Length: 268
Length: 267
Image (cartoon, rainbow over all chains, first blue to last red; front, side):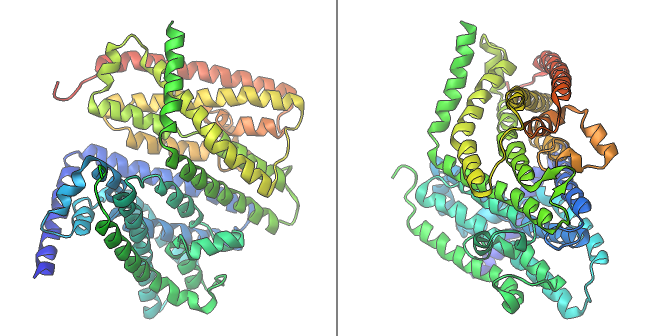
């Protein structure tokens, strides 16, 4: 019964937030365009390096383009459900607003995620799909129905990894009050994840596959799809990409519940 | 008296950052990971190249360039844009108009404080760790070392002027966020912070090399490595000063326009 009620409320929460954003259409469109242009500049810079040296870690430009677009699409999908929502968690805790959310007749996580569903990532998504569309016509992949399903499943799994990590960072504020600074670390590793994992020293490869598993939002699934070897994981890489998202979501749920149980407000 | 007041803003900004100690180590760690990614790119492409030198630059020089052009020169201008954007959106900017200060000068004073804080507590540890891990080459000569210091100051002022100009545009657009993204996109490509201009196609390098963005990262790092001889170093420093004068003039003009444009919602 509670699940049915929650599912019925979610579209209303999303609709309300989207309507508030659409009240400022000029700012919204400007934000979409500026963000897409910014990522386009970064990708052009990477293309210049690949053009000058031929490959990057043995990857051609079209393969790198697929990697970048996969990274951007998985990130923006996961972040639209989480980043701006959980970035303000420490403010909610410090100002006491979190207390008001806890007594709402709906799961706090569900309320936070869907009442702030960020359509500001549309520019990211448009650029990612455009670049991915081009890259897929250039790379040598023999497509089949199961491979296409696998491609989508790994994208969803990657988005889940992003959402889970964002949730865990945000939830930490319930116990330690401050957590926003941890996003600096997240984005450091996020930057690493847009390049082939093989160009990094072994300790960084280990971190990208374990403690901060952002390798699963881009470089590992794209390596599997392109038939490139994945260090350490080997033949397990394909399955690991699909399992990473649900596993991280489970871990994030446990962390969220632990933080919720230990929440005392900012004032003690 | 006024100079002392602005110096107080610098000290105040520095001290205010000391209150957020947890942000320091996480920013340093994030920057460290970030620079390791950049260095890994150069190690990878140079490792696969047939020659140890590309465009007259060796791998140790490329790594040094990445460290200098990245964390050392490319300071966090997003904070400045965020400060201006918040002041405009909340109406706090009106308070600055009531005080006996020049708002852009206040921004400069306080962001020198932020810059010094990040330099001492974030950038230097990152440079030391990256340098010890991968190695850094020294400046090409004593002249280039001294010239680099001058270029560094010019780089700071250039990025401040560019970020402030973008920030003041928020008086018209009412959003600094999109302006931050636009400036970031221009800086990513044209400042040379990620890709040195010598790797650009000739026509693009010729254009980018004469735009003010190149004085933020490319020219200071290129001078450090000795890519410019003595006369070129002096010539391009003079051109950079002209660009800075133009940008500061534009900033002063835009500020006089923005003050009269100000609308505080609800007041």
